[in-house]
Image (cartoon, rainbow, N blue to C red):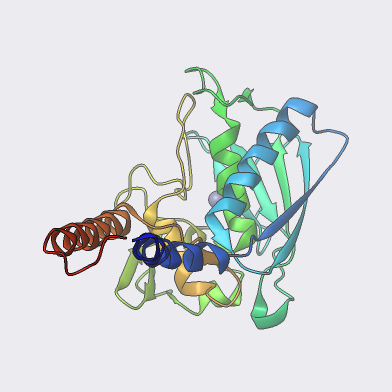
Length: 259
Ligand SMILES: [Zn+2]
């Protein structure tokens, strides 16, 4: 009987063990300028831990982060901006140069506008402040891959139709220039983290569309972490119940001996 139980337990947990051991964390290494206060660093570190928990891969990614007064959008090739609804820059990502194996991103610089009334807390932002959590996540996603200047990403973009294509994925992008092609269209996806702009008092998190772009463009660099989904958990529990009931029935019929 003890052997039967051990077999049952091993049969149930082996797939779970396999699913968890194959994932290696992506390593995002921030380097903060002296302009970035401790509370902002703590919050960005929290955002980075979340991203490292979302993606797997062997990529080490370095990212200098600083605060600087950004007055207007400067048309510098390859520079990506996130804006307030009025068009003021909230933050930018620049120097997006993939140099690693398989053109994996390795580093980028992120600058937050020091003139903005930021909220650098874990809780939801007040109505008059811009959410640092959302904007930092948005900029870090540009830095690690969600950006037209990266070849793996641009290979899936159709510039004339302003769409991102990959398998069944067909997402509408925000515009036809480099910045527009690096964001999702707010008309089609009104609440997506990767929209061009965000208003005060709003928090957004990484969406399924955002994750699917990474899965398509950067399969050789990052993969989504293989944590069983709700459906997979239900299946695992269902299989366990079937195995257990079969064992109970067989035991009652004395097919399996009791020692
Ligand atoms: Zn952006």
